[in-house]
Length: 157
Image (tube, rainbow, N blue to C red; front, side, top):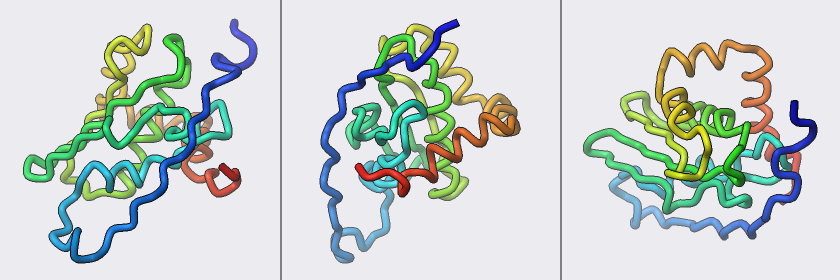
C-alpha cells in the first residue's frame, strides 16, 4: 500500500485571468469551450489545495463543444502517470457539468492519450452511466467529490 500523496510536489501554474464577455459578443447564447472551462476550472484537486487549472490538469484547449450535436468533450491530463485520483477528477468534472449544463448534452470525459497507466479502464468507467451512478452512491466517494467541487472558496489561490 502506498502511503502519502502520489505526487507530493506538483508543478503549480498561475491561473489565467477570467475573460469578461460583453453581452453583445455572446448574444446568441451559444455554448463554447470557454463557458465549459469557466465552470470547471476551479474544481479542487483531490490531493492538493490547488485547482485543476493551476495543476494544468485541464485547459480551455482540452475542451470541445459541438452545440449542434449537443456534445461536450473534456480531455484531462493527470499530473502523474500512476495517478490514483484520475477517476475522482473525472467524476468531479462530470458532476459539475451535470449541474451547470442542460441534460441534453452528451458529455465525454477522457484522460489524455498516454498520460495514465490505466487510461482505458478509467475512460470506460467515466463514460458508463451505471458505473458513474454507482460511484456517486458511495457516501465516502460522494463526499470527496463534493469537497473538490465546493471547497474552492476555502482556499486562496
